[in-house]
Image (cartoon, rainbow, N blue to C red; front, top):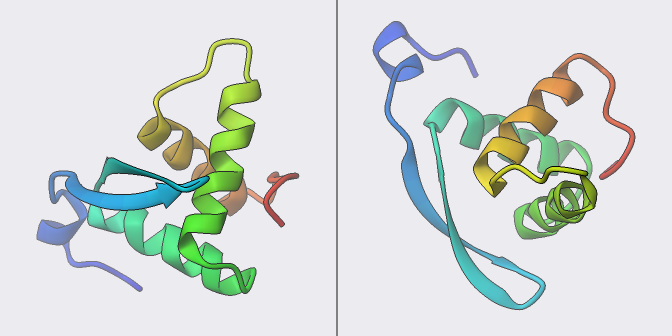
Length: 87
């Protein structure tokens, strides 16, 4: 899934997702979107289900970040091998 330099620095793209039966939109760079899809595939989860699990963790935080930030942080943690939830 290597991206060439221009695509790495692509601005966020707004996408619609459903979390717990509610439509919402998130803006993620294509790199993070592709990593998120790969993480869902690896766990054999629908993409919306993984996003919903990340959202539950986000809401439980002492100072919850926005959803897009939570996804980026979760993905970074996952790449570092430290994710404990959503497995």
